[in-house]
Length: 351
Image (cartoon, rainbow, N blue to C red):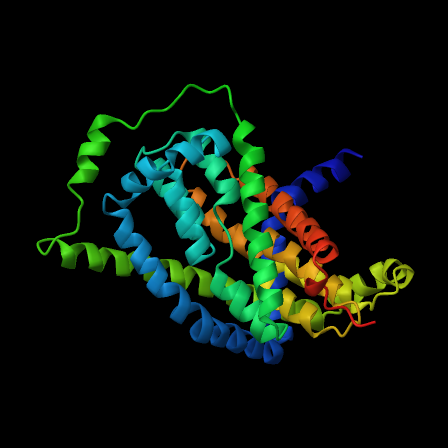
């Protein structure tokens, strides 16, 4: 009995190592399909992520080196403080997170913490609702490219943002009893010297490009990694097993078995999951859209690991982010459902 207990403890300690070894073996066993998956992931990254995200990352990096966050702070403080219990400077993370997409909101929140611009509690509140999908991805990729409808794209986008704001309001109570935080005078004065001018434009721009390329490469790495993981699951019949497990539930609701495997794929990596969801032919397309809303809100484990790689550079907890994204997905799905009930023009179901 003691030996068995000792073996369990040893297995627990080496769980990650064991999974990595299994992963490496699978890379060799399914090398042909894994190489193809890697190529597809790289194509997705090169054709979609780099052109749309890199300029936003550079612009965001440059803006953060100016007094723009403080200008935002003065303008939006009357809104941010009562609704989200965050100082006005948090509006910069919210707006840039909406415009630029994952994982810009989280990166700005971490930068605020590392630069002592917000308290730990405020930055954790920001993590819960400022890291969102971009309008370019939701409207362009999901709505127009995958579902072939800009109406669906705008519906997904507005419910996505509304649910993010709802999560932010709920998280205003996160560690509410903590003391009020004031930006140190030294930090304010230091930031006033960071305004971009002809003297330091080259230096600031070079650093912004360096940081933006680093973030873009990180995203590309995660896309390729999860593309390969999904490929391995397909080849090892992991996806088929998931379909068989949830097949009775799908049959009860008269849904195709691919729904469960598509949701599982989306929980791993959002782009691949939504692509599969949109390809399932249902007369009640509202089901596809509601599931897509959830996946967009949750973001997937790929985004979670990206955010985790950023938060580890600070003292921020990942817990509010995880809770916030689960709530975001659920609330977004509910908002889409009610929007389709209230506004018949949004309901594209075939009778």
